[in-house]
Amino acid sequence: MGNFIIFSEDEFPRPYTDLKTMNAEEMPTREVSSLPILRKAFSVINSDEKSAENTLVELLTFYDVYASLVQLIDGSNRYYIGPRGGMTSSFDVYLQRENTSLEKFRYRGQVELDYTIWTENRAYIFEAKSSRRGGFDVGWHKLIYPAQRFSKLTEENGLKVSPVYFLRTRDGGTNVIYLFVFPPVKFMEGGVVLNEMEAMTPEKVLKVDLSELGI
Image (cartoon, rainbow, N blue to C red; front, side, top):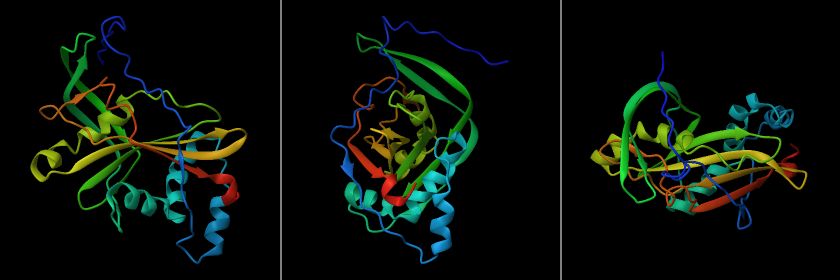
């Protein structure tokens, strides 16, 4: 049977994002496949369903959005799709108090990783969500816990691990995807800090207008 811990918000900053989109950058799209039937297959997505998340992350591969993302962030001209899926993990988690001291506990449990793309020096770790509206207050553990599985690569190889929140939602009635790209994770002795406010502030906010793609 699992354990749980309750932390007072009077002592610990809340580990949830408060994301804004007013400065979002529009991302270009172009088809990377000459198969018109594949474009039609993507166009029948019911993006309001939670099950659409897996297809939507692949949609941006088809329209070459991730190539633009890594070029913008890293200056890279190539990326690779990497490991994803769930695994059972155990690692230290730190909570920062209002007075900046840290409280440590051990997390043991299942961690889901929705998608990853890789360049030579960076891994982008995706948490994907499809929501009919809103979705901007995601729990930070959804991004920081999956990032932890690559902490040894940071320590041993200097890999940067950047969380990305992939949000399909509606903006003024228009179907859009936002990509919130966060700074590389600063691991603490192989563990993670759950409520560091600076870490939860994205470096870039990118936007894809799905209506232009017929979705």
